[in-house]
Length: 336
Image (cartoon, rainbow, N blue to C red):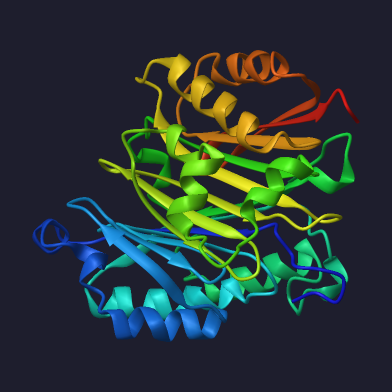
């Protein structure tokens, strides 16, 4: 807990592995037992508070954000003053015991609201990258780190990617990841994320409209005491996740999901419109990461968000090894 308030902005880590097909077909990383997962999370300084799974992946709501485990991929994002990067070596260790090797790493985050409260190495992006690279195996030799700016210092986007020497001949991925960060939430809407005697996570999902963002998703949620909310959604092989810190003065919410370039491009547009209506943020950033062309998705998203009373203030584009193209946009409400 920061001295001034809770740090809502998450650190996000995505790790990819490869190995023998028979083992992967048997579940791959999903065979990692819960005691081993708890060991990793203990190093990160968080715990599992809720979990759900389907035939494709395992989903964990954490005391600070979320963890998703696929047969060859792990996604973990944590907020507060957690030590996210301490998860890398344990995950590599357990993966090696299963005959898997790391092929790719991605690390992203926004700007901390309370940067002075962060422990080393999260005191600066430079220190994070030095520390991160020291954790990675040598074969991840294609690397890039960049801070994607906006007109608002509160919403710069930090990106690091690394991949192995076989990346140049790898098959492009049609999937894209959307990471949305929202600050200065509407106060009336934010009050719905404060807990009372009878409030449960399911109640918050229903009364806030979060359940309508993707009605097809199986939702696993948790309401924190005295306030705050987290949820993971499962829809086939795709995940979504929301985390909310509703306190006045440092209110924050994030929404993350994945999509495909072959989807109806209006699907993600409709989803983000619902997200904006749930939170009505004063400032919002949207990062889209896609290994192959995502067409005009970012343009459609910009127009959709602007139709809800927000104005696009900046758009930055950059290329990263393995991850592909990152498009980073920021918006502000007309009330700002």
